[in-house]
Image (cartoon, rainbow, N blue to C red; front, side):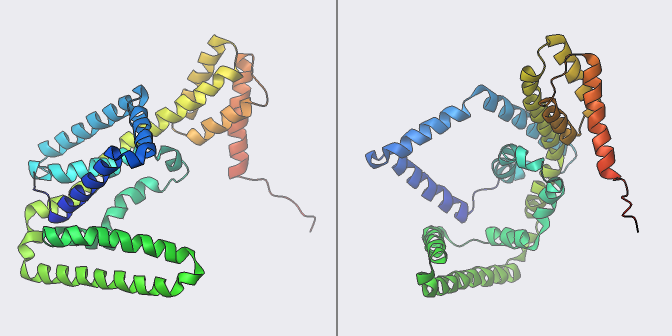
Length: 297
């Protein structure tokens, strides 16, 4: 595994120091109580089960890429960072993913945007640890002050100054990176660095089927829980679930519409189940091919 860069060491040092102070200082008792509740939430059986499945699936993907010659142990660090920043976080976005059909495509394409490439170059060529330790809290402080200045009209002059300071620091980063690309091009052109760049989008691509099926599973589980209150007969409820799986399958929007429709009339027979499902497909058909209205002209 590649060693940590000075920027990553700086981040770990500051985060460890701040976290340790918040958790140990008697001044932040409320923060410590919130942290304990957060830990308890993550130790819930459902959360542990989901992240166990995520970890097993990611391990299988990495092993497959390793067997294909697309992954080496040098990529372990970038894989861990991808796991924390993408694989784990996406699980908490499943509800919003259902509302955005372009999410899966954008998740992969985002890695190839110009800003991502620039950030990758920035993170490849870092300053020494002393400078990074100074820059990180300085950038955080300036960004915080800028956020406050933007929220109040009386601080507009300060906002311009802070934007100028951030622009100057950004120019410093760009200049240093361009200089290093010209004089140390081998660092970014070697095989391991190139792999560090393509491994995250490649892992994301292999992770998409898991996200999709997790979204399906959670949606079906949540919707089927509602059937407990909509269909009293146990066997009829089981039959309704089987029909939903067979007829709606991956079309979870239709599933949600069907469950919502059952709130208006609770089915008591198999024929009523069939009728409710046919009604959903009929509505979709009408919506996709709306009848033409003759305005009399």
